[in-house]
Length: 116
Image 1: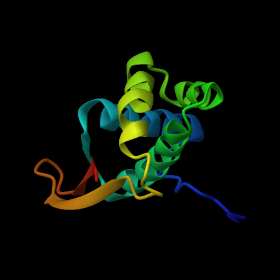
Image 2: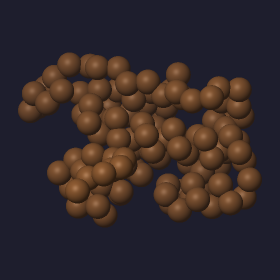
Image 3: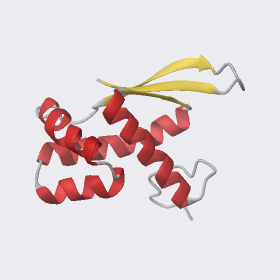
């Protein structure tokens, strides 16, 4: 049963899915945008929203939880020093997904995940 399942499976094992989503979240934090498929963008968006909410708190427990997911000191530092204070007054909806059209190589639909 899939009751209360938060993240789509994306045709991956759980370990691979966790690694892909963490990598995309890290790239979004460091570079400001990620181009991917709409399904992956939507799953990454949910993870990033949770990370920014932790960054808004700013306590040490939240930093440790974020680092456990991102596995990058640079990304965690940027999340808590720049993005957390930037979205301090915003209640949610820190990112947006823009449809880009089909990818040139295989024709898959693409989307861009960016900050609001």
